[in-house]
Image 1 (cartoon, rainbow, N blue to C red):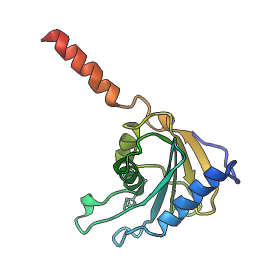
Image 2: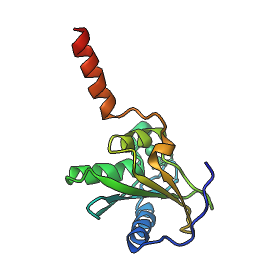
Image 3: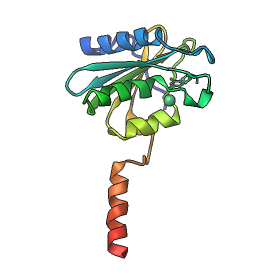
Length: 152
Ligand SMILES: O=c1ccn([C@H]2C[C@H](O)[C@@H](CO)O2)c(=O)[nH]1
Ligand SMILES: [Zn+2]
């Protein structure tokens, strides 16, 4: 799944999305891991919601940057997304979303573009479905209910 590194994002919106992801990283609350992550989510209506990781002394309660951004957007009534940019403190590298975040993104569509950014603002682009093949989605629940109704 190695991708070509793109140095300059092709559109102003993407430039803005990338900028928002980097600045969200600086707001990370991560006193335990000291690993900062920033995410920026682009809605199909063109709005950007950013998020950072927010940790907790009870470690498992920590929330990733990607899920922070998604929860912010959905709670503001925006649930249609075209892209997400993610950046972290991985030196010269790219940090992919964790499994929990992949599942959370899958809830809102498999066609989202995922831009992984390194601290130098270079990016690797993936289609979300590449990152979570054979995803479990709301459609699976509909299928299950239908089968269940037929059996009962
Ligand atoms: O894609 C990722 C991976 C990790 N983290 C956070 C969770 C935790 O706060 C810290 C270290 O795992 O990084 C994210 O926010 N997004
Ligand atoms: Zn995560």
